[in-house]
Length: 495
Image (cartoon, rainbow, N blue to C red; front, side, top):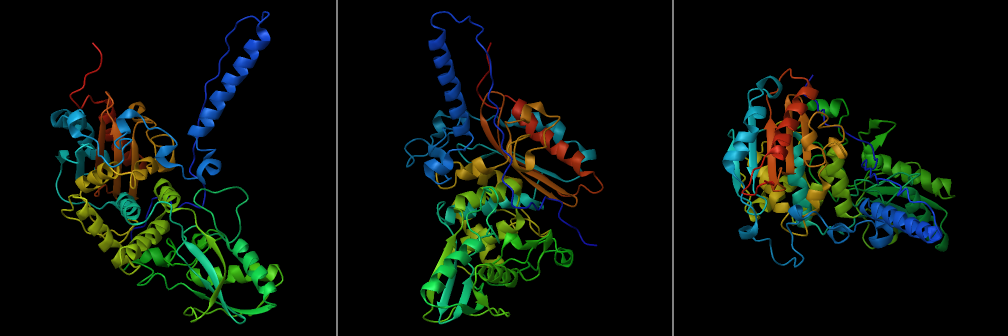
C-alpha cells in the first residue's frame, strides 16, 4: 500500500473557538447606593460579555456579513505590521532587530532531537518586518505536506478579492435545465441545522428558487443536466499516490459537488453527477417532475439564468481551509486563483500561479517543486525559508494579512487545538499551519518571543521513518516553544 495522508480530512464543521471571561464579586455590602451599584455592576458585566462576544466574532454576521476582518478587532501591537495608513508599510528602522545567534542557540537543542525528528531537518526564521532570513539551518527543499497550503492561501488571497463569492446557478432553455457549477467548495445538499463556518449555499435553496421561476413560466416537468467545465485538466493529480483514488481518500476535484463530495462518510467518484442527483431530488420534493437521466453538457447558447446561490466569501473559505487543513478546498481555491490569473483552472494552472505570485513578492523559491495546492503529493518540495518568507510577506498587506489570523493557534484552535500540551510557552503564542504525511511532519507560522518580537518560522522533517506521529509533533512543538521562550531581539525584559 502506498503512503497515505495522515493530516485530518474534516467534515464541514466550524473551527473550534472558545472564549473565557473571568468573573468576580466586589464583596461590598449593599448600602443606600446598593441599587445604583447593582445597576453599574450589571452594566459592567454586560459590557464584558458584549466585548467578549465581539472579540469572539459572534456579532460579525450582524456587523459585516461575517467578514469583519482587521477593521473589527485591533491586533496586538507586535502583530500590527500593517499601519492605519494601509498604503505605507511598517518601517524596519523602528522595529527591533532579530538576533541570529540567539535564535540559533534557542533552537539548537530541540532541532537536534534525532530520535523524534529523524535525520533530515530544515529550519528557517525570518524577520516579518523586513522579510529577511535571519537563521537557516539545514539545506535544500523538503516535502511540505499540508504546509503547502500556506503558499496556496497566500496565492488565493493575492489573486482573488477577499470578499468575492462563487456562484452556483441554474440556466434554462425551454424545459431543459442545466445546473452550472461555480467552484464553491462548501456547497451543501441541504441547509445545515445550525450555521457552519464557510457555508452559505445549498441546493435545496437553489431548488426552491428554481421551482418558483418554473411556476412563473408554467413549467412542471424538466430535463436536468449539469455543467462543471469551469475547471479543466485531471481531477486527480498525476503526482498523487494511486492509493488516494483507490481508497477514496480524496474527492475528485470538480467545480460542482455537494457536501465536499462525501456521502455517509464515503467520497464519491462522480461528484458533479451526484450533485445533479441531489438537486433533482430537491426539485422533486417541492413538486417539479424531473427526468431520470442527467448528463454533463455545455451551457446552451442563449440559455437564461433562472436561479442562483452564492458561496461564502473567499476570505471565509480560505480561513476554513487553513484552519481545518481541507485538502479538497485547497485544490478548488487554487484553481479559482489560476482562473483569476488568466490560466486554466487545473493543477498545472494553479501551481504556475503560485510560483508567479511568490516571485512577484520577492520570496525565495530555491528548490520549489509543486504539483498541487494541498500538499498531498509526495513530490512537492518547499524550502523552510520559502514558507517563512511567505508568512512574513502576508502580514505586510491588508489583502493577504488574513492568512496570519487564519493560522491555527497553539492549544486553542484548528489543527493545533490539541498540540503544545507539554509546551506551556507556546500555548496561545504560536500560530502555525501543520503538515503531516507518512514520515513527514512540518510546522510553519509566526510566534512572538519572550519580549514580544514576532518571528516567522518554519520547521520541517521528511525522513521521520518509524517515529510515532505524536512524538514527532511534540518535537516540532518544542522548536516553536523555544522561540517563544527566547529573547531573540535587541529588546530586553525588565531589570
